[in-house]
Length: 474
Image 1 (cartoon, rainbow, N blue to C red):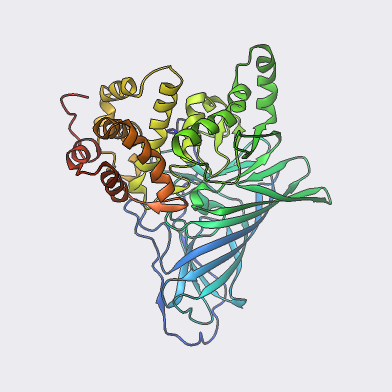
Image 2 (spheres, rainbow, N blue to C red):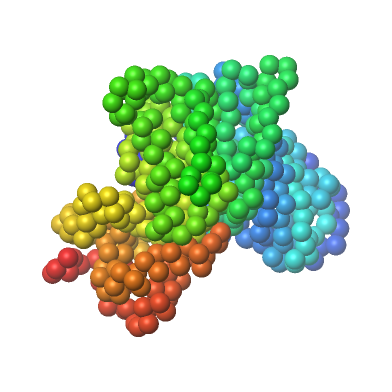
């Protein structure tokens, strides 16, 4: 995700506690213990939950852009990873009307964004169970520690949902840690005068009573922060890459109208950049290996609707003014580095952003514009890159700061120089293949690189990944 640039005001997540639902009488067979109310992330310790692993989210949503009202049902299939007497889900705002576990009503208690569900029967370790939650309300916009906005962002003709790092809890209950990836089916009903998009494949569309219902399916595991919904009036375009991957792009109709004359006259502007998406994907496959998903695409919003581009899985989001070729390359690279291989915790953010930034450098090099070495030297001279070590941001507000992006890319350039091009480019392809559709941490990458280099690289990591002092030479 390129660093956010737009800041506006919205209320932060409320921490007020309230209790929902009536307690059931006589919970039976108490044997388990409650799952943890947090996944232990070093920057967001209460985000995510313990005791279970989500396998599939079936989200059924209805949204009215005029009233900004959302009706939702989350049907969540999970597997218990311990004997559970209760478990938590993350949900910011919205009103919970009912909850069931395996068809039986469950007690629901709420404190801030934590929902605690106590099922009628304890859940055995290894058991697969189904949770259904009905909820509604006006979804919130969440302000991050760095001041950027995420969650549910109302637009002039609809809304867009973005989730990095915590915003997905603004529109559906879930286990919102990047370490718990799942498949998704998202069914969205909206008025006929707007369209609704999400990740993955569009598998069904039906119209009735002035409303359109569209179902989207993502079978490859996806972290919840990469899930998106975009509602509005769009110009849809379909194409394919050279390898046959279907590509669906959606451009806000106003943006499409504003840029159409420039597109036809000289090939400039947003749409011409977007039209290069299939060729950028083809280039990325040549450098990073086979594209890891069944579909690809992009969604382009008005500049005032979204403050940054984001690598939402299979269909990255761009505000109009961020749709440049470097940012397009950056978000495409994230489909390998960040989406398919997802960080285990937000401390590992450089594994997303360092690789995507280096992809920009490599694309320029392959295009004959500027070498990656030259980009490295410019980054070396940029003082903000030395504020902290890329593998150890000092706070949640710093996880999208310059060292995570450019120092991460600098480390990759130094690794390339240390091991040579043949080994480096094998690492660049092998790393996302090794951890395809999984999670990984910094230590996983350093071990992987040393295995393929055939030697210890501790001095490299100490200087460029964990060090804060600028070395004497770039």
